[in-house]
Length: 175
Image 1 (cartoon, rainbow, N blue to C red):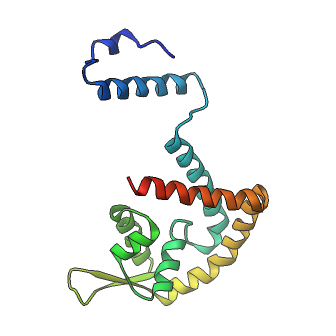
Image 2: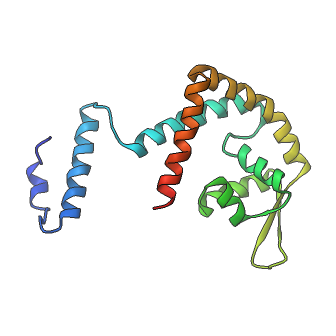
Image 3: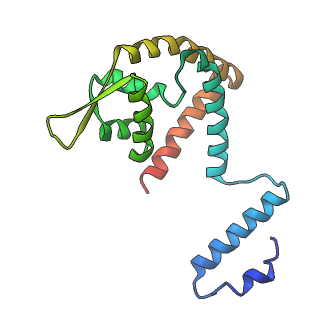
């Protein structure tokens, strides 16, 4: 393990083991990154994979005018008919702040509409005709991207990946 630089030693209160551990882990991660070592961190790997896959799908969907992050939201809204923001957040496994930002763009582009629900504190979302058209245009492009990923990984590895990602979500969601 890397030696702790002297400027950090004075900051450590060894009676507070959680803080000590966090500082040492942070320092090790920084040292490993500086040394160009492979990072064995779940969140780093998932974020790297997510960014690369998102960029790939965005490029494939470019001609549709919507992003890979927008397509599943539109699909969920279309399938539901109408759905609340909370319901959409739960189905899409996305925090409300990020979701609200994405929904503003979809609404601005005329792909969805939001209205006050029966309970005036809730907003109900529905897809517009333009939103349905966008999905129809994006779907064949998404299918092509999906096929390329499956062919690249192989059907068995792709199924395993989906299963393991689902398990990972369930593991951290329960915490």
